[in-house]
Every structure is written in structure tokens, then in C-alpha cells.
View 1: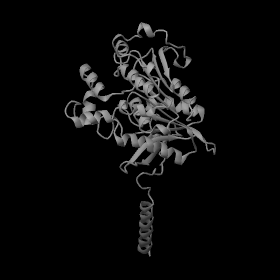
View 2: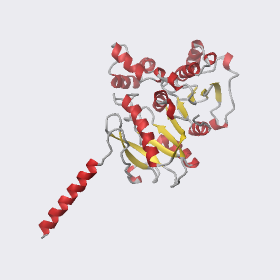
View 3: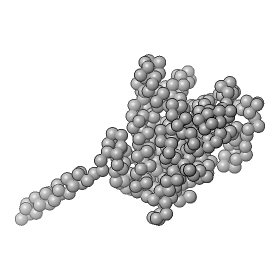
View 4: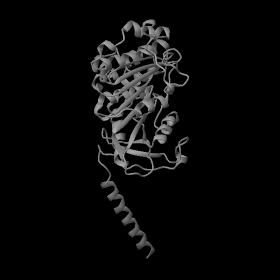
Length: 343
């Protein structure tokens, strides 16, 4: 009798397992999110869940952190936060954005998009971009989201991916805030090589070699750089911000931010708002604002002690250079995003 009961249990278990396998979501659809206790997510609040999302690119299961406001039928804005160059979805430096989202009653998601940028699957790859878009789809499927207020923010490598994704799927975003971003991988490779920074080797590992090794590799650098798609983000509210000392005390020269703004200004029909190359080189070299641009500063309490030294707007796009280094300011980013609506 015992063995018959045990055998029946095994058969039932097998049938349940088979049904679960057959009913799992196919590639291109979000997988059901699984919740794992806060003890498994060091440094994150207990109400943050670790979820799994089926990749629409290669059908792999990709992790993310997720939190939604208390159950409500009213759609809420969605804040998509991207980790930095060397980080992943567990990165605790994103906690200020979680706090900002919580204070506003927003949905929060923190995708992994293939982890640190030191391998071909990360670093602006099609898979990484797809993972961010899949995270948005998953959040929309699992919580009421106001689709006119989907926001994207990232710092450093996260800023790089925010701009790349903005140009890749511009119709999705109400606002995109990129801080100290890499906008041109080939240029940054040369800058890192000159300064003997570890990122040069990581870029090579991601793209398959130095940019001058072959046309194919050079093309890979271009496709993974925001400068290749930023013009497609015309009409989207995009701000790019950088600390004046970045590239000296930090790893990404201010010129990346300013050249990215130039592309957006031109694409939005404000070519006269572009900065001259010699002005950009001055920012990079002198860690200061050129004298002829000194009047374009602004008092902005969201920046606290890190005063805004230069700010220029071109249609829906904006550039800000502040008294700081390689960093983002969560309050300033989210306050600006909160004012944006998708038209």
C-alpha cells in the first residue's frame, strides 16, 4: 500500500511538472516573477522582490529587482533604473532611486541587462537593450502602469545604456535622464587606454578587439554607442548631466555628455544650440566653463551644494554641467523626470 501511494504521488508530481513546463511563457513574453525573501537581497528593503523575466531576445531568464506601490487600480508611473558599468541588478547605489520612487508611489524596476560591461552579452549589445525593454513589459504586465509616464535613468554605464535605449525605442519613454554617460565607445576606449584605466580591456573583451582591428569590430563599437542612435530620440525629453571634474577625478570626460547633447539639439531642429568642438575641448581640458558660456548657469536647489555651472536647452533636450565629478544626483534626476509626460 505504501509503495502504491508513493508511486501515485510520483505520477501526480510528474504530471504537474510537465504541465508547468508546457505552460511556461514562450520567448518574447515576460516570465512570472518569483519573490525571494529580503535575506537573499542584501541591503535592499523587504518589500523589494527579485523577479525573473523571459528574454525576448534569446529566451534566457534574466533577473531584476521590482517593487510596486500598495495594491491600487490606479496606474502609476514606472521608473526604470539602470546599474553602472561595473555593477549589476543588485547594486545598492541605486537605492536612492528606489527611495525617490517610493515617496511618489511609483513602480520601480532594476534590470540586470547582462550584468557588468565586460563581456559580449553586455555593453550595449542587442541582448542588453532587449532586457531593458522586457523589464518594462514585465512591469506593465504585473502592476498598473501609467504608459504616459515611463521613465528611464542611469549613471555612467547606466547612462550609456539609457541613451542607447532611448534611441532604440524612443516612443516608449516620457523622459530619459543620463548622468556622466559614455556616448562613444571607440573614443572612450582611446581615453581609457591613454589613462591606463581597466575599462579599456573590458571594452575590448565586450567588442572583440580594439576598434582599429577591423571594420567589423569598428562597426560593433559604433552600434553599441549612443551616438549611433541618439538622433532617433528626437522629440523625447532627454537630459544629459555631468560633473565638471569627470575625466580628471572620474573616468568619463565631460565631452561625452556635450557631444551627445549636440546630436539631440540638431535632431530636434536646434542646430544653433550646439556647442563648438573647441568649447567642448575646453570643458574637457580645463575643468571649467568657457568664458563665453559662463552666463548660461542656473540656480537649481535639487543639486544642493553641487551648483549648476552650465545649462542649455534645445527643445525637449537639456544638458547640465554641475560642480561635481563622476556621479549622479537621484533627487535632481527624478524631480526632472516627474515633470515629463509623453505626448
